[in-house]
Image (cartoon, rainbow, N blue to C red; front, top):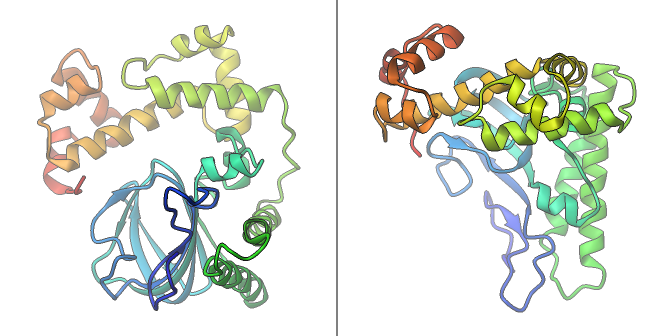
Length: 299
């Protein structure tokens, strides 16, 4: 069990004899100007969800290679698979809550890919700003969770106490997001399930399969119906999602400087580097070589 230290993250660390129930829930408090274990020193690909609340200062970072600025009382939503790069001169105080799908599913919360587009739309809700009262309420909840994670495991019902505190934060975020988007309540119906199955398939097979027809055949529906349903749920067509997966992976491989362009084309299952180059330029406006020369990311 870790003790709380200034600027360090709190989590329930587990030995072989301890349950792993809350090992995937972490709360951190840190200042981006201080170089410690909680401030990312290089670009990284997120493997979990996170909610960052800016408490002081200003934070500049790139999300999937696009620069954003966050100020005090702003919320930033972090999504699995997205690439983040904190500016070297960032100077902000942040409290963040990190969790993954394994933690949610163990607790009976099932947030599928399609639902995440409605709850925290990845284009509209990468961030939003809070009023003072909204900020105070959310900050109080996150700090309370931070402190509960420092309580010893020997305390009775501590896991339930921590989980209920986490749920309070999660539901506050949901209500804040619903208030801003003013979208009708999401019904878990066949369209949502179909969209989630499609996005899951794409995330697993986008390197080899880039045709909407392939995924429609896997799901036993027509390509037109697939795109219509996916568009209704996520505001993007099926083809746009496939391109997004391919281009994001291509950018990551190009900027890692581990592979050359021919190797990247092969990794993404293009017939040759020329075809890959045309595809990349069509969807980004840059050739793979120029993008590679102007961007660097450590893997």
